[in-house]
Image (cartoon, rainbow, N blue to C red; front, side, top):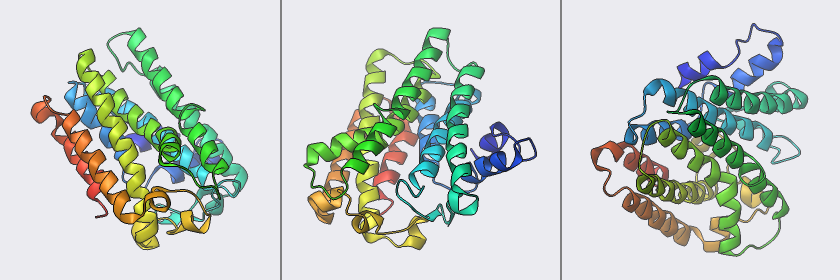
Length: 281
């Protein structure tokens, strides 16, 4: 994935050099690459060709990278550390960081439009729509808006889940579904993958909340304890650590159950569901 991103991002020597250098700084050299891994794993289930999957995975990772750059800005979470290195606005400046996010988001959709990724044009348009919805006000951006509006408030569990279905779950779901759309699956199997993706999307956020409460800054690669410091509602603040871990385990099992009938082709998806939940416990 690092090679694919390095190849699809503009070279740092191309004007505007500072912006392109900052885009590469944001997207390369760190991160777990969970979303690209999910795209490849879902594509394996659907029999998709790797050339298609790497472009879809790069598009998803660019959207994710852009969201992190914007989340870290002083007007959002105001953080100085990401993936074990200074955040983009610290390493460069705030205006450049804003443009980095804009550039990465635009490039993601350029990739989806530029390369042949699906069996027909209709399906490829479906892929563009899927990523757009997952990134916008009905997905990640909307979830971030709810998150900012919820600081200092007490949310119910359904309210918290609604926020994270948008903020975190939507892009994880898109990663899975884009991989599947690069190949061919029946509607029934697509629905099962969709359920799997929704379960692990929520599980990912539950585990992130536990990690923020329990892990160190060195382990996370970002500032630990930020949620509590900023008085944000989390699964830990709503449920407590033990019940949050139990919820993550329930979601992991639901995700695994959704993959019944896929056989060995879904082994990577199963392993990723385990990794997402068990990486901290």
